[in-house]
Amino acid sequence: MKTTLQTANSAPNPSVYDVIIAGAGPVGLFLACELGLAGCSVLVLEKAESPLSPLKQLPFGVRGLNALSVEALHRRGLLPELELHKRLKNPHQNAGQGARRQVGHFAGIPFHEGDIDQSQWPYRLPSSPETSLMSELAELETVLTRRAEALGASIRRGLAITDFQQNADAVTVQTDGESFTGKWLVGCDGGRSVVRKLGGFEFAGTEPEFTGYTTQVDIADTEKLRPGRNVTAAGMYLQSQPGYVIMQDFDGGAFHTSGQPLTREHVQAVLRRISGTDVTITALHLATTWTDRARQATAYRQGRVLLAGDAAHIHSPLGGQGLNLGLGDAMNLGWKLAATIHGQAPAGLLDSYFTERHPIGAQVLNWSRAQVALMSPSPQGRALHAIVRDLMETRDGATYFAGRVWGIGTHYPLGGPHPLAGHSAPNFALEDGGTLGDFLHDGKGLLLDFTGNPALAALASEFDHLKYVSGRAKEELGLSAVLIRPDGFVAWAADAAPADSNGLRQAAARWFAGNHAPASSPVLGSFA
Picture 1 (cartoon, one colour):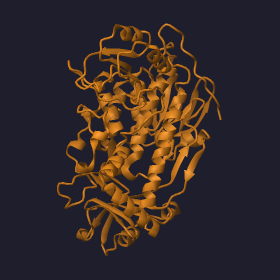
Picture 2 (cartoon, helix red, strand yellow; picture 1 turned 180 degrees about the horizontal axis):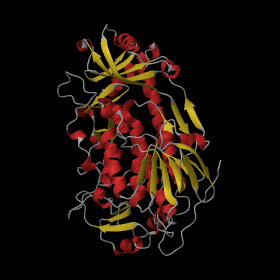
Picture 3 (cartoon, one colour; picture 1 turned 45 degrees about the horizontal axis):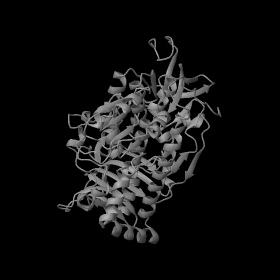
Picture 4 (tube, rainbow, N blue to C red; picture 1 turned 135 degrees about the vertical axis):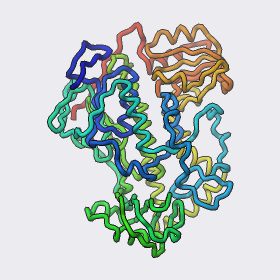
């Protein structure tokens, strides 16, 4: 039974949630955490009866969290709850590499720790969390579920959305036998998103080049396969551990779309052809197929319906970029949608979700397409692969690819004269204790003042959900003050004590509602 809900701006209403989220994967759960942190009532609907999927429990359920995802979890106090990365071996580490520790790859081409010039990233401080961590989907979902429920979110499993209707005030969602009403609906229901299809969102992009296989098998002669990721003249195979094999077969996605059953004989034939061996599979336990189809919604919002994660964009899972992209969507959207719900959103705040995240998604899709081109067994693909491998062996090349894979260079064009504006904020460590990440646990914005300027404290008090923190930092990078949004991105920064606070005031007003003036109402746009 649904309990009575109390939102920030309404009387108790047992029939209306602030937000209904379709999908209880990492993106939907993280969004539920963000909304719950801001005091919103949230219902998560998940079609699967159980969160325990066999594929999520296996080694190929492991994903790499990039720097932005690690920072996001750190900024919400969730990072200490992840344990797997402390004991998990890098699945792409090839034997015999000695001291050259592989820390990532692009199209199967490794880059190594010792080749990366971190001095090119001046805003990565010693107090910053790791640039990448290995995690497991099952573990991540468990941690996020626990946090979402602690913040009041209701998670209902075994309820697939079959239809919805929206008007100027709410969205009514139908499932098999039940209906629910929310002020907003967010589709986080994956690449085959029902919300996206029912909402009439255009999903534009490119068709696949290959069929990917993820399998758990028994192999009679595993020594015939090389460990790690191997790009061959016929495709790619990855053996992270004996018995767990991933393959890419450049058939234009034909087998994935054929509907043919995945048999032991078929998987063995594909593995033999790609590996160039006569390896024998004696049993097939689990298998699934996927492709590199790359598509993106041309809009992330229709009226009161929004998309995030794979519902908004799909691409090859090479490099695990999809999970990181989706977590970034949730971190960007959560505080903006919450401010809109509470009537505390400056004009255009919710629209900035699309203008900021759509270009990032487009970049990731092109990054994925480039990897597919490099892994093609065609003569052109082999030639391009050799050139990029040479570039990645250089210090600048390794640094560039590491920065892209880890998301360190991610930037929103927020304007302003300072080069730090629009970038993820450095994890400043204050001399009297605490880091930037600690100050963001409550999901509020932050004005960090290194000079103890009373005028800045007074200015911060004029805005809702903007905290003022003053203190000397161990490394201030020549900065006097930094305005940081709830998602941890820099909205404004100053190198010297600002004599004129107009720039800061304008930046604060762009992202935070003044606490002495009525907030604007959201513009709802089309109900297509």
